[in-house]
Length: 364
Image (cartoon, rainbow, N blue to C red; front, side, top):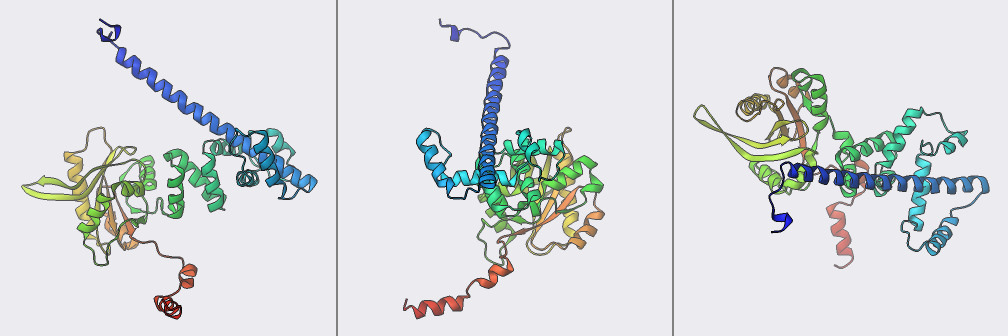
């Protein structure tokens, strides 16, 4: 009889679980440490090149030669292409004051004064994000406060590079926390702020292909059919519970369009989908649904159920009045099936008639 087949001692499973958890945590810390050192190294290289260009007048032509010589000297090392070295220089110039190289800060006489705690926080934030994310952030976002918002979101939600790009392209920072709601008057202050920042306005469902005049059921079916993209647009923490979730109340049948549970907020989230404008009676129906979910589904350790009404054109003033008299925490947001083009870009696009004339002129 082998040792592995013998009866295991009491508590062995807990020991195994504890060791595996510690190993995973150690692996995560190791990855983060390697990334932090890489960010620091690239910043230092950028600082060295910037210093030489300023003090000795070196031009941009030195970078291709530097990339070639580094490749010959260190063929096993990756990341020193001409393009990446230019990124290092740009990275340093975006963040010239960082606390992990104190002497560089001290030598920068012309740099503006920045509180030490703020410099330290910025350095820690930069080191917590992969290098590829920084390349996208620097190239796509010029305003530092906005860039910082996305960096903090990357750390908080663990966004991959592709998801980060998607969030930037959909202007997530403009949409976060804009839902019309009664959260401030129906939830305690810390919870109400957290819930408000969890929801968006508008939500972008540009992964759907619906014709004008679609029915609400078509929208509902489409969102569930593209559940992964729908959850990504909703944001971190939403877990899908069901579609057309059945409620039996007073010998009558009711159906919730979409029911979710939010893992961070620790509460159910009822979503009601509407086509067209917001109507005041929607809030009463949502208040009813939240009351039933609180009574029949909510566990004693759960937070109060939240309602989210999604419609195409919510009148914010009308929604504020409608929510003022309801008991449950409810938000009203809009959704868009296609993102409108900027006016300057839209005006520069050719019309259908222009395209047809050009095609006919080419003999096609």
